[in-house]
Length: 134
Length: 291
Image (tube, rainbow over the protein chains, first blue to last red):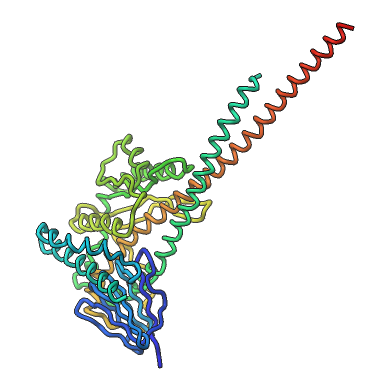
């Protein structure tokens, strides 16, 4: 059976480098997108959430925060502003950060700032969820 | 002729200096490695970003009124310009800071000839800021000490401010003067236009992509991401170049110190021999006088 190759990079690091897998789920802006081999070439914007990839029974995720993905010729390339793999998550620091968002939401002015705080919160939550299912 | 004690003191002091320069060289070398690793780590992102940008830009139809597909691409006559002056935070790195400073000054001097009416400066790195403060430039922003700790988010913050000023028409172009890292022994000062954004060369790929949600929406996000990354790259390059320059400078300082120690030791030995000879003559002539 054909396989997909998944690469996740940020400006600072390469989180996943050419991982072979059967399927990938991406957190696109308009909702999740599932990618299987032989997918049509696609460029999509990503929101905040989990990039999940399956290989056989194994299922793993990395958390990403905004960016985009390019799918062509059974290669999935994810370019994220930030991305974190499970073993990079500092759980205690993330929990502490999560607690600050409630207060930050009170202080925001304008929709843009609120979205940003919400995105930050969603990213930290995503980080915690991958750390929990490690 | 200096006394033997004086020479010994000089030797000891030069040795101390040599130890310091040697340690600084080691530190710079390890920082350089880290800086180079970061440059390399950024490469895959850069490649994919440029390819995608080129292919998306080719897909977005031009606007009917002839305006560019993204506000950050707008070419206007350059009247109000912002200059990013990128230097190091610390000295002792050869010509690194001074050559960047010189390039900033010559940019400021040539600006009126190119029809630029006003230039304001964003100082990145303490050395350049201190230097330009004495020259009395107009500041837009100052980031002293940025190189002790910076990441992509730092660059994105600077980029966001520039982008909003550019879109609002406050500035017509942004240039950056920085040291480009060529190799461990060569750094070149370059002046590069950051805004309006130059789209990477139009190598339009054969495969027809599906765009989700639309090419326009993707371009909307990609162009600022490209700008963020350009500024991040400038910081990375300058950081690597600074450490490379410091390593080379400290290496030659260590060598110079070694040379100096050698020549001082030679003088010291000569003085010692001369003293022994003198003492011998005294003993011999004393004995001769007795007999």
